[in-house]
Image (cartoon, rainbow, N blue to C red):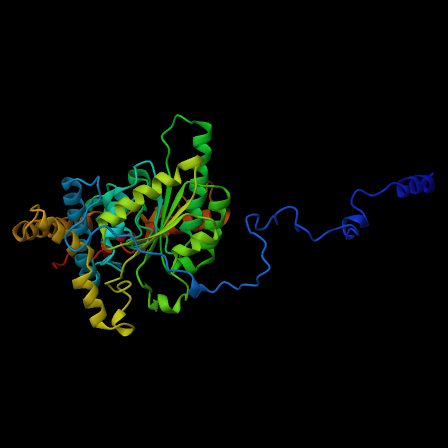
Length: 437
């Protein structure tokens, strides 16, 4: 019985037998191949063996709007320009004060945004409140432009009980999902990029389920150093294949901590990488806030076209500051180079000059606003330092839906020690006194 079954089966031609791998004797090279290769369906055949040299390709241009003190995006009002300038000043002044506060021992760590204020404020101004943001750790201006207040910033920096992150994160790792739709900042480099792609895919599915809802995009901020991480490449490829409505925003400020871009890559920057993944890409002057705003607004429009697609933006700037309070950038770059960017290509100064050329600003107004912002920052810092810290017992909250047996034992032991030694385990009893700047 078994033998008959085998012989009957063996006599039938196999659907995927040897003929699948055998070359046809009647095949012709004329017009070969009859169909495109699936791996590159748009590639034409050629008899010329031509290795494409990177040097033969024209570098991507850098889009700008300002020319000296002139130029402006067509839909930017004077009121918007004034608001942006004040927000840029706020970031700049807050950075200066908090950098000194760290040196005085009032903070453990801080990072400033000098040289990149226009990238943050201009791009955030072009997004809507419903757009979902993930970022790195130099996007203070994004939080500010979207509605974060000085009180919010200081609560996180002082790690008091008003901090949405409950005092668990490093300074400048703000958490604004509920208030400004910006997810909490994480130190781990580039992890926010695939997270943003996932958020964009979710937005795409939501739009398909409910076409009446207002369309939104995901926007992801990262630096040129993060673009060297594997997460960057994986996120761009998935976003392109799944046609996710996302704007990838790269701050190319010249350095990844102490590593200059010349030691990171030899290609034409970051924007061209998007083209390799089939993503529309643009390079923009990041010291020109009008160019930043106009390009981001257009990128958002394109990201929502035809059901969604990713867009990559590379904002060219220069990190005038040290990488962080843990860094001394004078050890790896010339002071004259930094000074040149601080004085000649400073985005805050460029917008100030433009406002003055239009009769919208003057030195007296500038001194008054700077003084007011400085006083407000110092006031909020002092008030934030006075507020109590989150309860130490809260370190077990939000970790598990249900505590593990081991975690429960640790919590009980901590509570026992807190009861036995209340002064030693009172976080607020160990806060240093207030020191003036």
